[in-house]
Image 1: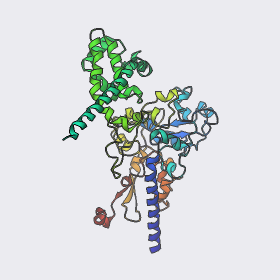
Image 2: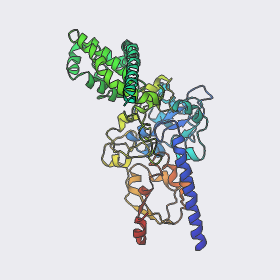
Image 3: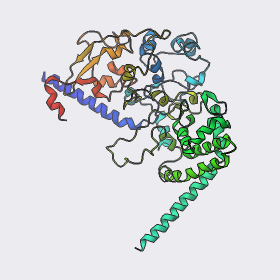
Image 4: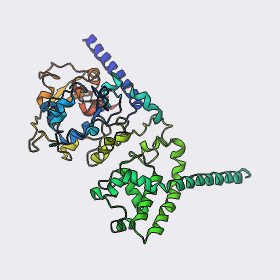
Length: 147
Length: 325
């Protein structure tokens, strides 16, 4: 019992350290995009396109999470859906709405592909982003203009 | 006594210098009114799109000009109706906006032309002197506009000496200047700035600074549960799950209700949470690393820094000691 409690306390300490780390990282993040903006760069850079930026905030005003994440099969993982333009034009993923019917159609390339080239796939402002895979490439470059 | 007049002269000299500096810069800016207008304002104010008063339409402008140049300047900086703050181009400085307002007012009609065209210069001078003292030494031109949408007050100033006071966070910036979108891309400038959508929603201090759950309850947003049919209602289940946690944190109350308003059962069960009591090991560490609750919280749903929104049920015996710290 005692050891169990101890390990619990240790876990809490671990969490605290993680939280502190998180807090210390927070002001270092330099892009100020919206919380939950997803940058998707699975294929874009290689194809010479800007990465796509998906604004969660814009979509959740209009649709419940389940519409995309249950009905359309988007996994809860940035970059985990292997979306490409063929699938979209075929009516899958984004193409289920972005077909000129529910939302504007795929010929508006520059409305989705708006990210800065070279930005890795990530959920902007997520804890995973700051703890596991800091968006390294973009951060230092943006440091200078901010200061 | 002797130093005072000296100080005074230096003060006067500096003021004069500032004034000279400013007036020269304003003089340099003033003719830019047209160029700046063409760049930022023309798409709406030349065509009359979205009900914008057209350039040179004296009938449309007369009542607006009556409210005074200062009011026009405020509308231009803060936005009005569908017009976003600074016409959507947050890089415009106050001086530049004054120049644009001056230009547009001057174009509006023949009668008030001379008088009104003068006015912005007059009102601009004292106001801008105060500004010149504040933001100019602090930030280079590039850094200044980033502050604008959040607070007009030069943000970094007042409390920087106090490390315990958090700096004003920069958030809800329009896409071209949020650092993630590429401002070179044309489409970036067509995207809706978040603040124009958030103005009617319930506020919060974290995440998008929107309390999404409250906004949904208040029906300030009505997200569809079916992509085609707006009349489909979500399958809401009202069942609270209480998770007793170790340590001194209050227990966690998990409300199915607020989750099922957004989500389908299959989103969480059984892949993320086994629907069985005691079958799910959850820790803050795993949540921070994006598992369990962290699949959404800390990414899209409210961030994990809002401890008490989950840890909301005080432990039976712990009420007294918990209140202390």
